[in-house]
Each structure stands twice: as structure tokens, then as C-alpha cells.
Length: 439
Length: 120
Image (cartoon, rainbow over all chains, first blue to last red; front, side, top):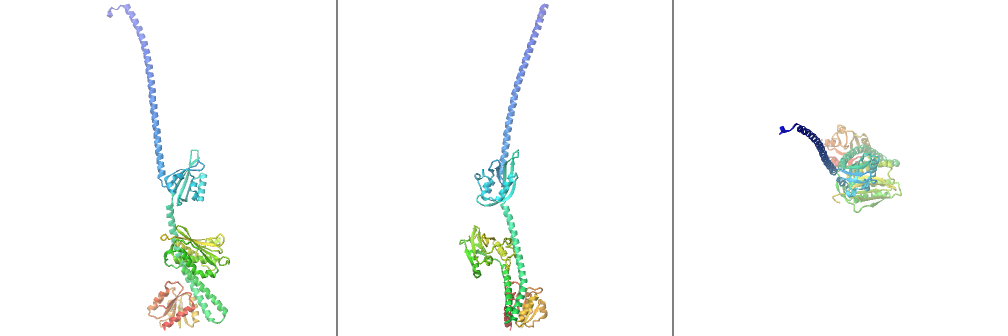
């Protein structure tokens, strides 16, 4: 069929075809353009969508991270709280920004240690909490340290809510914010009672050992001293008695002098005898004793001396005094010694008449015995040396009575001391532990 | 009557001697047990006043030696030291008595006289 087309016809057709191609090409371009735009639009849309997804994912991630972080923080807090709660030390936190410095946190050990409940502690001022039993010296020290921005470290005696004593090591540190302002105080309280008790026991044993050595050494010393003095006393007495016999019925003045020599020699011998008696190393006989009876028995022994000196004993004895456990002779020796001392202190004072002996129950575990005179009292410079061996303020004193008395009382688990009375004279007092088996 | 005094303290010896001489005793003093044994024989009559705490032979050992030798010597211990059960121990060792220093003259003389009576 193509063979049948005429040349002019053929020319027109070609032109038309060319036009058509152009047109089509243009159209194609347009479509292409449109298409391109569409694709691009689509692409942008997808991008937007993708970005949204990413954003969404990021958001989720962030959320997840937040949750994770929260979880970790929670765990950390949990562990730290657990740690604070499980430690044996009492830990408390004080809010330093509030004017009354309230305790805002305390761990279980703190409640256990102090005996106070959470209700009684939280919101309370630390010092008020201990207000009743406070050792002002230590608490002033704590306050000073904190107010000067220092931490505190110190050991102190504390009291539980029920009054029970306990030793504690307290450390208070300061917590500051990023500006350096103190926001909290953190206290850490360690119960050192057991440690302290152990130390005290060791100290006591050491003291006991020292005491035994001291008494042993003293006994040894006194024994050799007694021997050395007895020899010249023997000679003096013999010479004097020989002279008395030689001057028999003659020289009354000399006879009198010789008699004084004999008397004083015998007095010196008596002192030695007493000294030996005090340090007699006899095994103590321990029994349950009513101290009131010990006192009345002892006073009966020296009543003649008391009345001869124009003095009187006034009893203030606790009728319900619990029994104590000890050696009757040794304890009588202590009472005798204190009474003799008091009598001597009152000797020069005509108007001091009464010697008061008082027994009482000091606390559930202890009795207290007081011997109160109205004598000259104890000079302040003598106070420290009073119980030292061979210290005496009396012209013919041995300086042994009080030191031995203290040894005896301490061997019985008590304590002997002296104090000047506010008005006049002195009071010697000692404690003795109650016999728990008989009480 | 003879009295022998054994005491390491010179002054005690001299003083006791002076005192006992006023009672008309014959007194000889010695500063150690050894010098007593060296001088006085078992046959020499007399009472021995014996100190306990002495260098060399002490009083107890001296008394034991006297007894072991079969001597009948009367012995009175005189001690400056406090001896627990001193009298009991002295009597057990065959002595006549035990006195604590410083000893009263009359007490000592009474004991010496009793001793002499027993021995006679």
C-alpha cells in the first residue's frame, strides 16, 4: 500500500507527521515533567513520612531512655536506701535549711540504737531529742563545729529513751549544694559500748594488778620497816627499864622521865602492831553482811574513846538497807578508821559534838555509807593526797589508815572518797555493791 | 643464873644485858649463832635468849641445831618480826617461849624464872 502514495501527498503527510511528533514530544516532555514533579512530590511525601517515622522512633527511644534512666535511678536509690537501712551504724540526716534543723531521715539502726521511734525522731531537732540527757559540753562542741562549717567527730556517752547508757562514736558531715551552701547534715552514730566495756575491763584488770602489787609492796615495806624500828625500840625500852630499876626509890624526877620513855616506846610499838594488823595477809572471809550492824558493832568497840572525848555518834541508818557481801573484819577496820579520823578532826573544836553515820541505798546495785564530822575539814591542798600511802596531816599519824581503807573498799568493789561539808567539817563516804544473791 | 643473848643487833644485846643485870643475872651476848656455839658448850648452864632474823644461822635453825645435838638448853625466842603462830612453832621446836620485841623487862624476867624452875 505504501507504493500507491503520491509524492505531494507523501510530502504533506511527512510534515504532518513531523508536527505530530513535535506535538507528541512536547506532550511527552510535559508528561515527563509532570511525572517528575509527581515523583518528586511523592518522594517528598515519603521523606516527610520517613522523617515522621524517624521522629517517632527517636521519640520512642527517648521515652525508652527516660524510662531506663528512671529505672536505673530508682535502683540506685533502692540500693542506697537498702545500704543505709542495713548498716549497723545509726544514720540520720538533718535539714540544714530549716531554722530548727529537723531530722528528715533516720535509718532503722538509729531507732534501734536510741530507742526512739520514727514518729519521735522525724521533724525533731537532734539536740532536743537528747535534751534530757545531754552532755552539754559535747553538744556545744558539735554545734560549734557545724556552725563553723566543719564536720564533727567525737565519742560520747548517750542515753537511750529508757535511760540506758551507751557509748557512741558520732560523725557529722556537711552536705553542700553546687553553690556551696550547706543543705544537710549527715550523722553517723556507731555504738562503741562493747568496745568501751572491753577497754574498761582491761583498764580495771590493770588497775587491779597495780593495786595488788601496791598492796603487796606496801606489806613488804611495812614488814621490814616494822622490824627495823622494833630493834631500837627494844633497846630503848630495855635501857629505860634498866635505869628505872637502878634508880628504884630514888630520883623521882628521873623516874618520871624514864616512865615517859617507857610509855612512848610502848606507844610506838603499838603503832607498829596496828600497822601489821592493817596489812595482815589473812585470807578474807566473805559473807552476806548487814552494814548497819557492822557500824553499830564498830562504834561499840570505841564508844569509850568517843565519850571520853566528849563526842557523840548520831545514827541515820536505813532500816531497809540491802545486804552486802564482804569481809566483816576488814569492813569494820574501814569504819573504825573513818570514825577515828573524824574524832581527831573534831578534837580541837569544843563546840563540834556530833559525828553522823548514815547508811542509804544509792541505787539498786549500791549502798552508800557516810561518816560526817563537824571538825576542821580537809585543806584543799590535802584533798588529792588524802588517800596516798604515808600522807598524814596529823603529828603522830601513820598516813596509812585512809590508803588501806580505800584498798579494802575497792577490793570489795566499792569506792571511798571524801568531801568537805558546805558548812563545816568533812564527810567520808564509800559505796559497796549490794549482794545480789541475798537482795 | 647465866643468860646468853644471841642477836645481830649490838644495841639490843647491850640494852637487854644492862636490863637483865639489874635482876642479878650473869649475861653474855653474841652477835651470831656461830659465835655462841664457838664459845658456849652444852654443859655450860643458862638460858638462851634467841633472836630469829639474823644473818648466817637464823633463830629457828639455831634452835634445831641445839635440839639435834641433844642439848637441854632452855631457849626463849625474842623476835622483832611478826611471826604467825610464833609461839606454837617455838614450843614445837622445844623452846620455852616466844616474845615479841620490844619486850617488857618484867615479862621477860618472869619467863626466864619460870624456865629456870621447870629445868630444876
